[in-house]
Length: 213
Image (cartoon, rainbow, N blue to C red; front, side, top):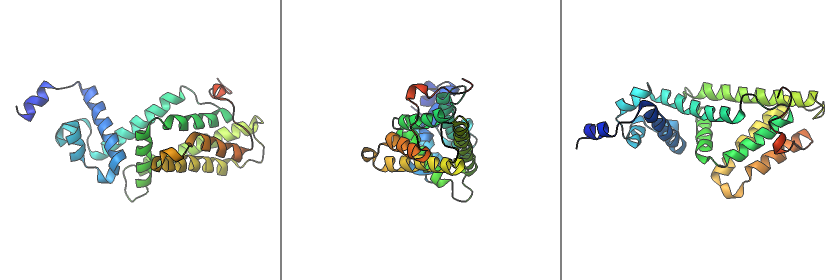
C-alpha cells in the first residue's frame, strides 16, 4: 500500500487533523525548543508530508503561533468571563500554579519558548514581551484594587511587588521542571506572595469573588 493510499483511507476531518498537528507541535517544541525542532520532524510525527502540514499552517512560525494561541485559550477558559479582583486574583495565581503541576507539557513549553524568545529575531519574542506586560499589568491592577479596598497596606509598592510575584512563579516553574519531587510550587508561591503583601490570601472558595461579580 502506498503512503498516499494509506493517508486517504485514514483521512480525518480538517479540524481534527489541525488539532492533532498542534498537539504534536506543542510536544515537540516543549521537548526540543522551537529552534531545534524541525518542520520535517513534526510532519513525520503527525504522519503527514511537510506540504501536508503547511496546508493547515503557512509556516513553522505560523505553527508556533497556533501553539501559543492554544495555550492561551486554556488560560482564558480557566479564568472565566471576568477575572477575580484584589487579593482574590492573587489567590487565582496560586491556584493556577496548582493546576500547572498537572500539565507538565504546557509548563515545559512555556518555559522553553520564553527562554528562547530573548534571542535575536525569535518569532515568539513579541508574544512573550506582550504576555509579560499583560500579566504584570493584571497583577499591578489587582494589587491596586487590594490597596484601595484596605486588603493590603497603602505603602505596598505595587509595581515592584508585581514583578517579584511574576518572577517568583517563573523561577519556581523552572526549578520544578528540573526536580519535580523537591519543589512544592503551590506552597512556595503562596508563601512568597503572603510575605510580600504582609497578609494571608482569601480561602480558595472566595477566589472568584470581588467587586463586579
